[in-house]
Image (cartoon, rainbow, N blue to C red; front, side, top):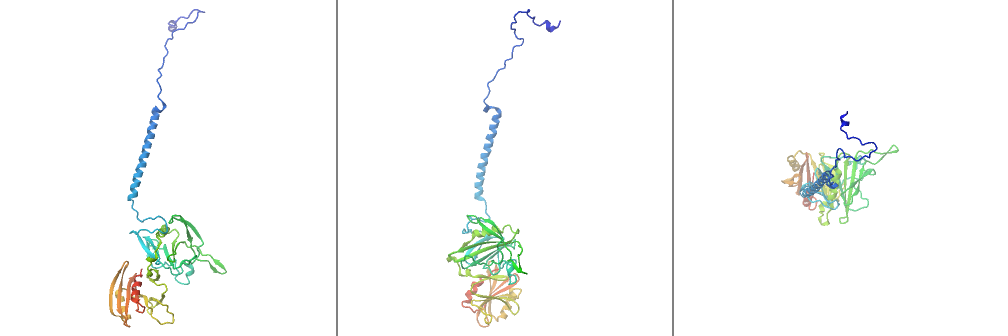
Length: 407
């Protein structure tokens, strides 16, 4: 007999009621513990911790940036002062900026690598009637002229008119200015447009048709201001070659921001004189004076200067002249000048200038008149400014003129 059957409980007789029996194994009853709220679950505590850490890091970062930003604003150096963009704000003088008077009427400031030069580059200026049609500048500008010493094709030219007109004519009005783009210039509190002109010569009528010149990469920008008090107009023009100077426009903007007119009390009468270029120097002269470039018997270039006009048929010695002397040095020039002018009682002294020096000569000429000379050595040229003792108060005029000579 099977052991399992042998040990099992006997079945009740057929038809007897089935009574409940005690289970062989009592049921296992699990103890149910009370559940923690969801926000106290371990995973949620970890999430809360990460969020709190992120908030702390964010607050710390904001506080640190605020402290460092405040500190930087106090000690950060500014190489070139920046002004609130407006055309009448004057930049404070600093070692980084140079100040220049414009036509005796206004003042601007600029910085290196820009410098003042004495003549407009041939690329832009007409030297004679034959080339006038192909150059943007066809007559003498009052100056000054600024040039980027790192990119010599970039220049800023100034021209001053002692009048106010609706359509003034400046020295660079030659050519075609109709093709242009617009850039935004922020030199003003209200941003305004600046024309960027793709300048080219005027069309030429040849063989029955107009020949349209090809643009040669010259860009032109102009800014003009007028003063009712001084009854004057000052204009500045930037000329540069496309894709060659990435700082030309920002330099023009900075100069515009520094531009301001002088008051009547600040205007020096000498500062109203116009600039005359005599390579390698420039000189300022009263605009009404007569000037003529000529040559001596030795084929030396000479600029004749006189307060009144001298006609071709008049044999009159001008009151002053500037001579490009055929000499190698001032030591060689002194005996040449003394012998040619029959000078006696010659006295010389060296006069120091900001950009160099010159020899001042005081002597008596053959007509027994006291004459003055200023002898300059400039880039292998010996240039002599001569007073011929013919003008009233000639000595005073000589001193005034010689102070305007630059190179």
